[in-house]
Length: 119
Image 1 (tube, rainbow, N blue to C red):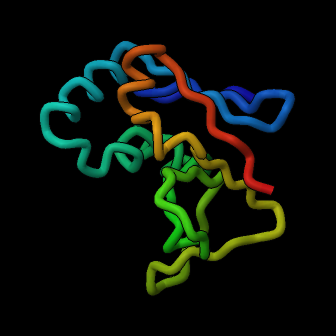
Image 2 (tube, rainbow, N blue to C red):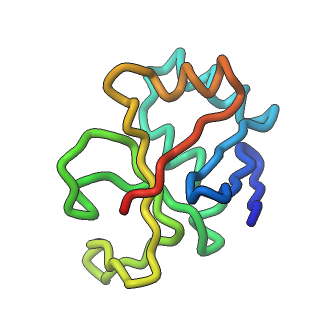
């Protein structure tokens, strides 16, 4: 399955990984964000897809994890108080290399990044 937005093309790979490829608008956004200190970048990059009911940025606090890695849910359902509801059919991807590789610089350099399916 491939999903496209103004900033990203998102593809679930056969091994379960998630490939995020920058569009030209996405590259411009990241370059501007780099100058501004990366604030809320994942949420901004994924805003269009999350508003349409698919791929959404999340973090360990929302899903009960113990990592600072960026994370992506296949969709995000929330309670009225803003807490995240996880369902049996949710998929969660993370970027395990976050401790040694800057994910935004990787995106800018390579044009894509691969997130690993959490199991």
